[in-house]
Image (cartoon, rainbow, N blue to C red; front, top):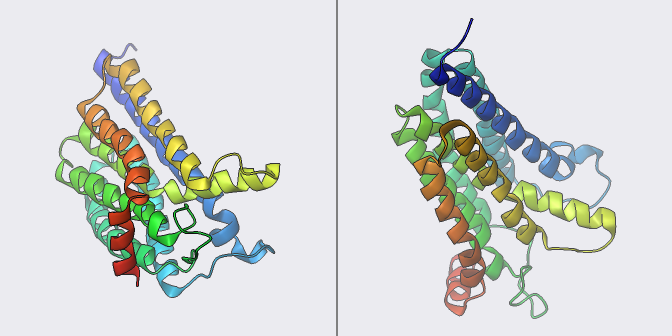
Length: 250
């Protein structure tokens, strides 16, 4: 039986966003596998996993898992259950923002020294990256919740929010690749900021394939993300930002 153009677009949308959810989950698993999920199997030095880190890690894992469940529910036509679980998603998102800011401000991974000053290893420089990721996540997740009745916008905002959240995982994947090659081709955070654009490109390609044009959320939301990327480096290396970071990090 033939299906209409609208039905074909709906099916393509469902397949695409389910695939995006699994891709985001896979990046999270691969990136944090050695230092978090499978840390007990890793004999190499690992970061200190404080209770705050565990709480934040658990919340982010719950968000990514919920994303898979939510996209699967929509694909199965269970919008009723999807809406009910969305309440939990809103609560998790709020908790991620609070815990993410706390972990960023209380990180023990980087120590300010004369040798690290004005480098990406300097905590006062690096703070811009977790702070910007959490901020973008907060903005896009909030817009996704506000636009929950406009499904085309809602799901794109949620993908943008989650892609902002997985930048630390992408950074670890880049660092793993550098370690395997025995040379630092590109710093982890630089590679992560570049690689995360793959999700934007995928969404743009999908829009052109199914709609013949970019969806406004892809255009403006993606454009905002792209604009923010060089700004993170410019802000992070600026003296005013480093003074601010010094004051809030102690």
